[in-house]
Length: 69
Image (cartoon, rainbow, N blue to C red; front, side, top):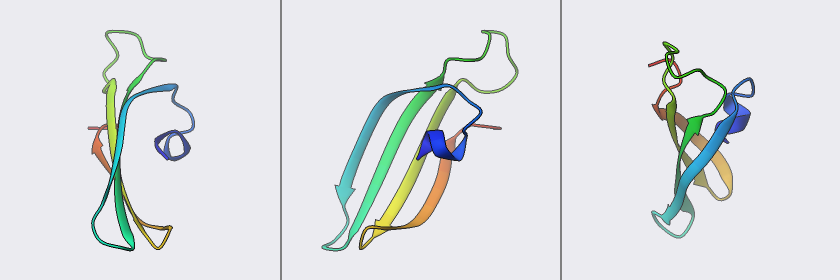
């Protein structure tokens, strides 16, 4: 999801996890780092997202770190 939300960035996913909230809802989290930016770039290198799925349908998506923060 993170790569689809930011297709112009090269992202290396470093951590991902998912947990069930109830029988039909899952919250997934992923953290990654941009590999296409120079070290002194003003944009954040560290990225993270959180997605909520209800009955396998994406119902929420939010950046928890980056891309423009």
